[in-house]
Amino acid sequence: MYNEESMPIMTMYTDAPAASSPILDALKDANRVLLLTHVSPDGDAIGSLLAVWHVLHDMGKTPIALASSALPDVVATLPGIEHVQVYQRGDVFPEADLVWLVDAATLERTGPVFEDHEATLREHPLIIVDHHVTNTGPGMINLIQSSAASCADVLLRLFQAMECPITPAVATCLLLGLTTDTQSFQTTSTKAQSFESAAVLIHHGADHHDVVKQIFYQTPYETLKLMGLVYSEMQRDGDIVWVRITRQMMEQTGAEDGAYDDILHLLQRVQSVRICVLFKEREDGNVKLSLRSTPDFNMAEIARRWGGGGHAQAAGATLHMDLPTAEREILPEIRAVCNAS
Ligand code: 5GP
Ligand code: MN
Image 1 (cartoon, rainbow, N blue to C red):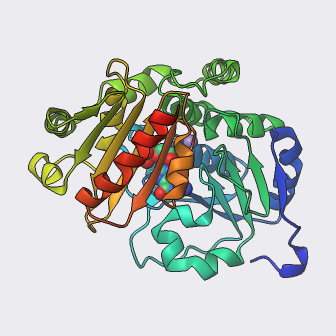
Image 2: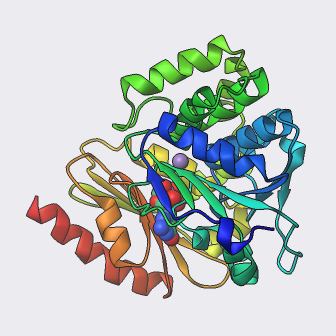
């Protein structure tokens, strides 16, 4: 456990080489390192989490990888995935010397872990490695590179600067993160660096074949059923297209929670669409809002107005209201943003 006097002031780095020695210093005195990421983790969140797990394990540390909620199917075959525990409400807080958060802007984004253990979490020194524009660097050591297309990208640079061996297992985890967050190198955030990172990872033995298989050829039958239902009720107002996923649709098809990501991907293919909106009715009656847009708009700005955040072209928020109210509140706002551009 850390003591107050040894805790350095909060430092913010935007490039990996500068952050590598403070991170190595922080790791020197830490053995048990608790690794966390955002709730409803995606490929980048878990790929990044597990890559850090491997690197720390290879250093002789005892990393504890803890996902705040169920893992997406896409990570099922990642090497070492059995080491990622999924937090259950009321679980005890793991004993740790240090907390390392990846792909998330704040501790709050760990959802149930934060809600159950906020005070304990805040007692621990914190490393954050992230690429979200909304990240203001609330950790003790923050490495935030908002120009990077994925957290995996930032971690690759960091591991290289730390001179950690990039094993095939680490490389595969990072390649999955990089590939999913760039939607297979399609997003506008995809830069030369993303392709360079991919090349480096393949040189280090990343299993490209398995990454492609997991992303494109493992869609659960139930997800496709759900897609059929959801798209049949798709609505459009000029360049805005929206869909809703109701609890009833989820029950009827038996689809997994993560299915909404696949649904959004396909929505963006609609000819001349500029903004895609997805409303997902949650079990607790709240609505998860997901926004996607062409580069003409800033979805993070809209999401922030509703207490959410994210990236310019992909953002989200939790709306504390029912589905019809959410549509009534959000759609005129989106219309106004569209009209103003
Ligand atoms: P998605 O629509 O896929 O859930 O999220 C798109 C992006 O917005 C992701 O980068 C995600 O981290 C961010 N995001 C989604 N929901 C929230 C939220 O409730 N709060 C914040 N701060 N970011 C969110
Ligand atoms: Mn990410």
